[in-house]
Amino acid sequence: MKNKLIVFIIVFAITILVIQTADIPSLSGVPESGKAKRIPCQTHATSFERGFGDADIKVAQELLESGNINLTSRVEKAVYAKSKLFEYVKLEDTDKIVLDELNSYVKTKKASDIKLNLSYYIYENDVKDPGKKTKKSKLYAGYVVFQVKNENNKTIYKVQIDFMDRQGADIAQSIKCCLKSFATFNKQK
Image (cartoon, rainbow, N blue to C red):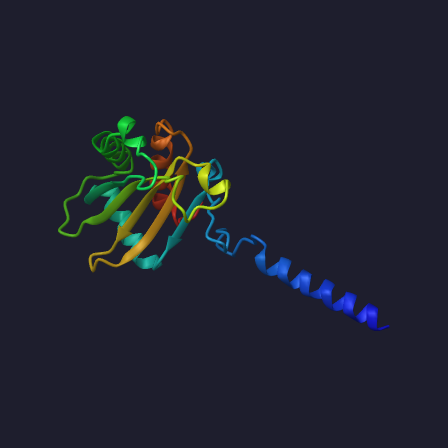
């Protein structure tokens, strides 16, 4: 009888642990873990997104659709490993991709004193970083992070999408997916 009770407690504890760590989607369709699979392009790479304030996001999406945008960008090179990605990828080229993609979301050009504050950076995965201990953490080439801030400089939306090509051939796809993620966040289908 005592052994049955111990087995029951162990099975119960494992069941609770599995339920708590499962990637169960929330009511909004975004997995609770932060991993995004909401739109098709997010399923092709590891994607994370998070919104902070639906009203602010709606205003930011309207600013996007009216073409009122302030854009800043930067790169984060590998520190421990020799940086190679940015021998192939130039920030000016990715800025052009971003601006072209942003323009594809403009519905009606309308001047406004308030601007969409959008910043992004391209991170080169540093495979020799001593903090990266697993093989999985060294597989991707890097990721693109987009961040949207409101007029009070508070982050209202953030998305991160990996790319796999060590020469950055798939960065444009990640950029486009980041922007589509923002443009469609919390919008009805």
